[in-house]
Length: 301
Ligand code: 13P
Image (cartoon, rainbow, N blue to C red):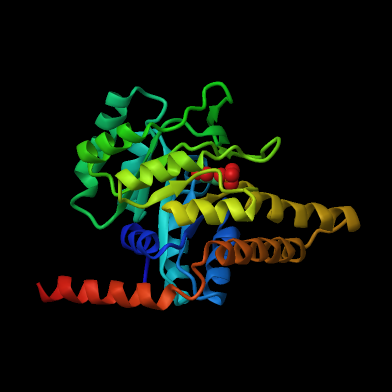
């Protein structure tokens, strides 16, 4: 059906108590691995790329591949730009056909975050695309964005309310103790804070730093109102480990199809496990049906 905005699928996920996974992809091969695996489980899925991947692959190439995969496989697919701090890159991706963008102004004071988010909302409200913003500061490393343990800050519930009122942003990523990249121990997730925020704002909440969170904690976050879970590190690890393993066993290997197919399968296995964990397997048909009804309404109007 082509790429769709993630707003409605995430609203539905939040109201029905399940999650949808957004996988960071770094190559066209990984992009196909994600959509194929989602199709095998009849699951909605969000493909996301960092600004670094937009620079290395090109926004148009990413959109063309994502669009093609979403038409080829029969599941709802959204394409999201992750952690963008640069307005011009964000506009470029929207023009190319991304159906969701994250304006990350979390490194700025609250007022500046509101202002920058509103600049993006001024465009987005005329288009059928999702916008995500971050409050507090998620720790760890994601592309060029590095937030140390000392700099990481949890979101303040009252600020989440004010932020939504002043920006109307349809999805919010509040920092609640998770981090990007690999954890030294188990993450220290502030479940009370998620509960407090979810009681006050009803937009779908986004769980950043979704890799290596114990399964029971992921389920608890979702039951409290987290509707989107971002996974990057574990997918990169699975993909790279398969290639590394291939070269350890056959150092002289030179046919990329041999090691890339193993990497793709490892990525698909990881995607399967995360989709099953958040409970969105089998939800594709209903979401597609809703999207079809909505596009008929638009045509009828
Ligand atoms: P991980 O590094 O834990 O996979 O987090 C990814 C993420 O939140 C991307 O925004």
